[in-house]
Length: 248
Image (cartoon, rainbow, N blue to C red):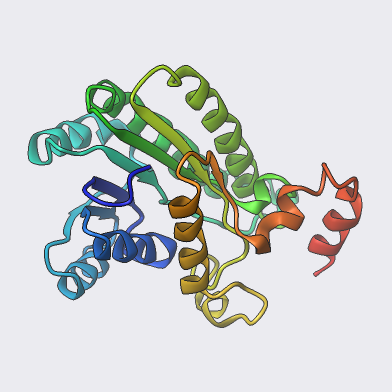
């Protein structure tokens, strides 16, 4: 993936990993468009980063994605990189039999990226250089039982990304997967942003971009902190890692 000279859409760009990625790529000379549900947050980010663009959009509303994609193509004809960062993570008690959180998580984390890709792929493959980056999680490989649907969607995104990469291997579109560990964001509430057990957000983004810069042909971007989850199966200690993660 080229590190500069791109026009990049980042969903969920108003906060957390999305905002940090947006600011990092903006600083490297890319045109950035951030999308998200909360206009106030988007305006805060663009005010702090002159030249950055924003659009209010909830990717979980998949019926609106075709019109959103058409507007993107019209307003930003040089768009060549999409980073699917938007996501929600909610604790669920499966014995309660409620599915509203599961449905919202599936719409935002899985159906949203798939639908947006469907709407944009013909446009992206026509660009001389393009990239799609999905954002999965270390929890795609070892689930946190308290957030079952979130983990299931991230496992599905990992699988989907592999298929997408294979189908696009003869095109101009590079397909990458960013695999975060537990990071200091507000994904699960304000307390996560200061949790000393979580990786500092800027450290995560700095290490991830360093991997992209030094290994431009990489397909999966995983920092050192996420490797115990990513490779538990390979390392033959899956059960031990699963128990340790969930006992905490």
